[in-house]
Image 1 (cartoon, rainbow, N blue to C red):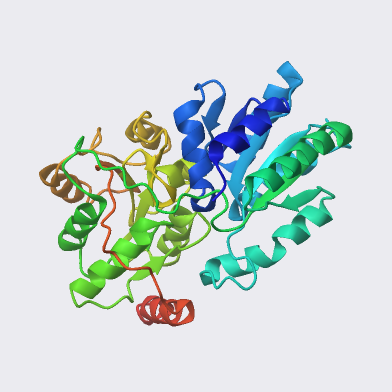
Image 2 (spheres, rainbow, N blue to C red):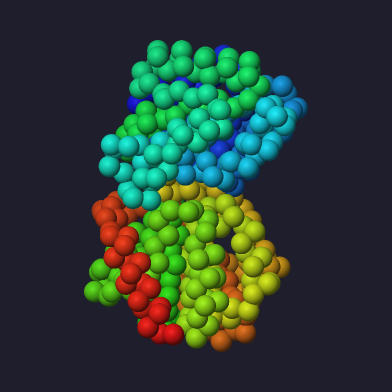
Length: 378
């Protein structure tokens, strides 16, 4: 791993003084160093990658200085629109450094949801005519690459990318930030939901720990996986998958087990509750206020009132966030017979169960089992 301090010092010496983006496990060493060492008006964790590109553009317009935007390569899709219609040289010519974690790099054996993105990462940059360099895992060589990137961004008046392979910008071990603000863990909350709702309820679980914990809870309970959709990629879209299922089968209870960071990433999806008739859908946010799966960086999840936002978007709620097992059980029962889509903000504490194994699954097998369950009930 490179030394984050030296990388940051090089960027700052070249005039880069503003940082924004979405945390990534391949970049967590640098992201956490920014969190600890940059003022809040110089480092902003964005809701999604497109949001970050636009924030960076606004900062450039005001200061005429080159910003840095960090992201996992899976977020390049979110960033694509502002990159080609805002920062592009044919539009407003915004120089910026894109620091991109390279999940799914060919030959590295990453999870299937990263494979295609890994293959096309450099191809997307080439198609967009964004110059890039693959970061060297050496402080001296990376310093030269960084200087080239900033100089090129200024000369071209456009984005330049630094691609980070596994281990270059990441800490050897992810931080496990545990707090005691709320009594329930995510796993405990999920098990309470499984125990309280009907046994044939359909679940969509968001990207990250929610998918793993749901999967291994089923294993522990000696239950099948036919009721569960594990949204291992496409962060922020688990609730939309749930909506599609709920629309197609209104006789079945459909629950989205969402995360606060994922919900914030595409919060416009919440408004679909005002446009669709899905009283069988329940949207539950397991809210620990953190990007926990990639390093524990803070989100805005516990700073916003999800319940009020959900009510304004057309959901039926219990009027407040729930914080205990008893409150969660009560909310599940209160909303059981609602005549429209329902929503619960479940406040949980931070912390990862360290012994939970990686999720090694057959995506094809799981989706076939899941679809068979849904279609046999039609």
